[in-house]
Length: 96
View 1 (cartoon, one colour):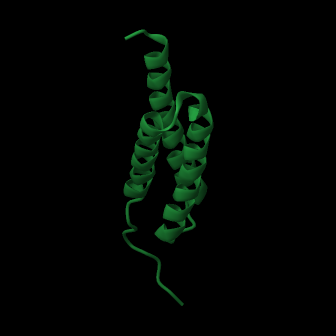
View 2: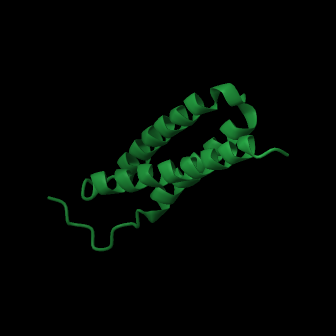
C-alpha cells in the first residue's frame, strides 16, 4: 500500500512549458514557412502542442486533474499560436 503525496508537485511548470513550445513553434512557422502554407503549419504546430501536452502531463504521473491540465496546456498553446498568426496576418495586410 502506498501513502498519498502530502505536497504534490506544481503542474504550472509543465503547462507553461507547452505554452512556450507552442510560441516558439509559431514563431518558427512564421519565419521559415512560405506564406501560402503557413495556415497548415500553424495547425500542425497546434497538433504537436497537443501531443507535447499529453507527454508532459503523463510524465507528471498523477491522474487527478489530468484533463484540466491538458486543457489548460492546449488552450494556452491555441492562444499563443493565435497571437502569432494574427501578427503574421497583420504583417501581410499592412504594406511595409
